[in-house]
Length: 193
Image (cartoon, rainbow, N blue to C red; front, side, top):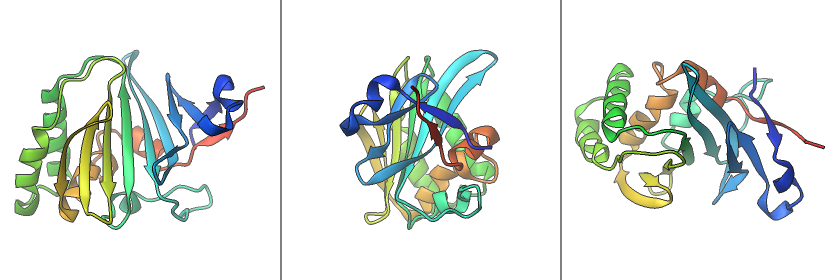
C-alpha cells in the first residue's frame, strides 16, 4: 500500500516551495532535475530514527499501483538521490558496518567494488538530530556522491559501485524491507484544508 502524505498547509500556499511532509521532515517535490518519488518515516522500538525520500528522473511505473522495481532504482543508467534526515545521533561506524554488511549480503562485494567501498566508508560521519545525508548518483557522470547537510563529503566514479551502494536500501536483502517497499511506491498526496 502506498504511503499517504499530507501537504504542509504553510507550504501549500506558496507555489514556488511545494513540499510533502514525511514524518517530521518537509521534502521538496523537486531537487535539481529529479522528482520526489517515495518516502518513509522510520521508527524503531518507539524511537524516531529518520525520515527519507527517494528522488528520481521521471520513470514509467511498472505496475498499476505506480510502483517501480528495485532494479530500476539500482540501474546505473538512472540518475537518483536518496535523502535521509536523521532524528537522533548515529555514529559513523554504524553506517560503515551496515553498508559493508548489506553490500556483502546482496552479493556485490567484489574486487571492482571493494576498493571503492573502503574509500566511500571514510566519507561517513557521525550524525545528530536533523542532520541530513544525501546519496546521489549522476548517470551521465557515473558518479555516486555523499553529502552531509549539503556539503560534499566525497564521490566515487563507478557504475558497479553505484549498483552496490544503492543495494543497501534496494537490493534483495535491504537494510529494511518496509523502507524499501515504501520508497519504491509513489507518494500519494492529500491536500489539507
